[in-house]
Length: 313
Image 1 (cartoon, rainbow, N blue to C red):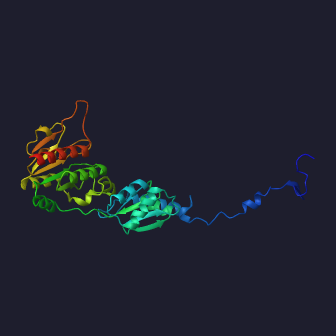
Image 2 (cartoon, rainbow, N blue to C red):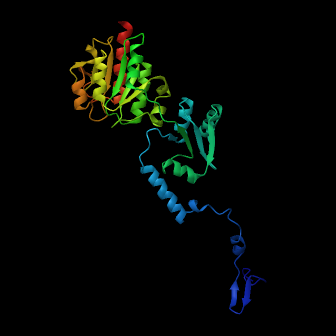
Image 3 (spheres, rainbow, N blue to C red):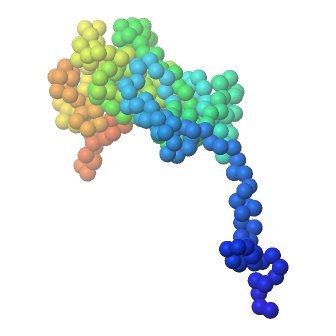
């Protein structure tokens, strides 16, 4: 007899006629599927929609100036902990598949005595506003800015001629972090940032600076032009970087004098009022086929040349 459709039990007889069995599918379908997810974690559930809406509102709401930040992602978090940037807690998603970066981040956080908190994926999504976090986030406290007068006093009390860096409209925190790193490397005494239309010392800037943001005072001022005029009143020369500058870096003869180097924004350079306030504008000689330098690179080149001239002068 072909097949086994006629074996006992294969065909079930009832008032509705012969019916083929389920082949065990009903029994497997009755197996449990684990605990029921929380309402906020069920796609399409009203509670989940409400939680997602709250997360979007939190993301769009202006952040207080003194609010802590979250640095997201496996590489950024591991690099930040290796650079020993200030942190208060490490968040790890429940069930996160560990790799060497996660393991290293947890080890470094544990060695520093940071709180290591395991939270649900839904809570991680809410905290990060839906941004890509890879299951791990580092909480960074707000940066402590200094008053302009404090920065000027620190520079004046130094054994070398005062050297400050002012940023005019630099909005990329990675550029800011790179400038902070160069300022420390080449002996600057402080950095001046405007409060508006400028990056602040965020978690991203901290990481890019490789932790050097903790080693240089940063002042945040309401009016950059007024701050530069205060520097001039204190006997400092204000030098603005400009592709069409009145002099070139090769001809800078006052490197040993008290100087404020002003770096313009990534796109438009120095603003009009800031440019008019500068005592002179400075261009960096480049090969003919190069248009311009990134703001942080231009700052690094200028500070390196000033440091070189001060060493040999």
